[in-house]
Image (cartoon, rainbow, N blue to C red; front, side, top):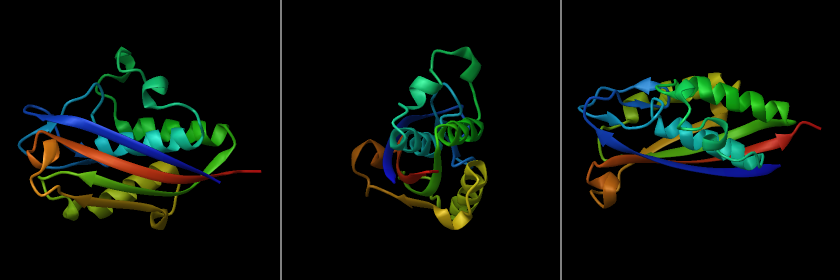
Length: 158
């Protein structure tokens, strides 16, 4: 068994959609990034790649490659899962936390879990998504950006 950890952060800006966990969330600002900037899915992908010692999403999907401009991170997650499987592993579980002062994410958590579990080919009870604020502290508390942490457990198929 192998454990992986992923972390991602994106700046909040005007004029962008806010997509977290594959869900478009109504908000006055969105996350800045080369792809759709789905901070949660990016952290999950890095945790999976890290657990398999396959680098990170920047290695697999370079941010200077025009093919990934505006990319749907759920499609990228599916590719990461394919690569994980191709390298002899299967995913046991994913646990993640989104850190955002606003918007409140509780109404979207179950939809995020469903989308992520489907993309990874997992039962929904193998995917945990949580959200927290930082009580107005730091860049997330000042609503300058949103961060996410993820850990996963993978196992060798053999």
